[in-house]
Image 1 (cartoon, rainbow, N blue to C red):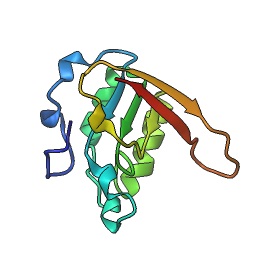
Image 2 (tube, one colour; image 1 turned 180 degrees about the vertical axis):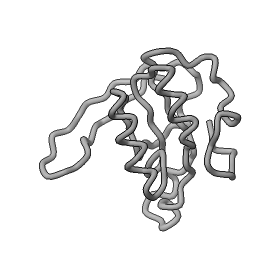
Image 3 (tube, rainbow, N blue to C red; image 1 turned 60 degrees about the vertical axis):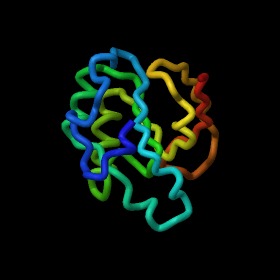
Image 4 (spheres, one colour; image 1 turned 135 degrees about the vertical axis):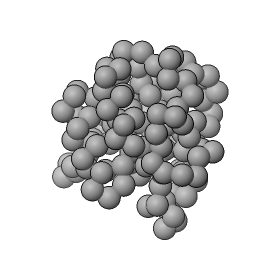
Length: 129
């Protein structure tokens, strides 16, 4: 939960539950930013620091997601995506309703959608809470 932090980028000092993150986990950052979808403010979302991105790769997580436009802003957006993809870690952006996840442990199912002429792979993401 990074929704209470106004400063950006989000660093390791902001991550309270670092010790519970294990290899192959899905890590979701709940910023609360999805409430701005459709508003110009959506584009000025919180940014995750490269320090956190690099730390997640060392933890060998499976997937990282955020309820905002991306993990990084501007040039960092694409750079973070390429860095994580190069490490075999998938990124899910533009998630919604992460506030319904109350526990640190939850089950995630991702169903990729086939849509032609896109750079990204859209998916239906379901979380069992």
